[in-house]
Length: 226
View (cartoon, rainbow, N blue to C red):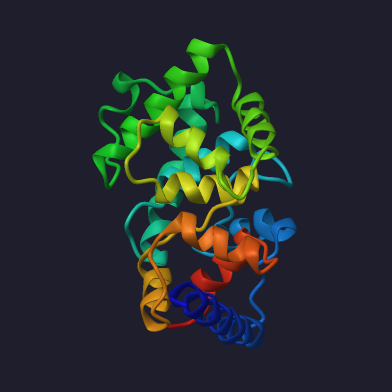
């Protein structure tokens, strides 16, 4: 019975928050994520020097790593500050990151340097590009089951030995297009308001049981005003 109540509250939350997102003409679709993210980051000043119409896998990993625990404005300022450095010093290639290179970078959280360098090590050790690594994550995700609903996220968290994976979850959502439900402070407020669990795996399972796209639903919870 308790599980039925959770499913009912989740359905009510999705209905209410979807109406708020639609009223604000907010786009939460997979196909528009690149354009929406570029628009948001470019709105902080002069347009950033993007490599093309779509955000590359390397650019996605860099951007999502720098999200961290900040307000939206803080995230945008942080990314805009270091994106030109990302271009100049590593040529948009995650494999070029080293501890020595980022030693003087004033990133807002120390783990961000570790995350970038760990991914660089992983790619170089396995002789992969970021594109090939992402393709392998998508292949892993194709084997998702009700018992293992987020295999791509589980794999990248193992690769990074991460105990907390919010920014990795955002990367899986927006770049890999895999099952996930990133939980930040704004999402947590909605979950608390509807007495829903702050458990990413359980939220993805709720989505799949109700035939909802977990990524789209996660963006609704993220974008809906509190």
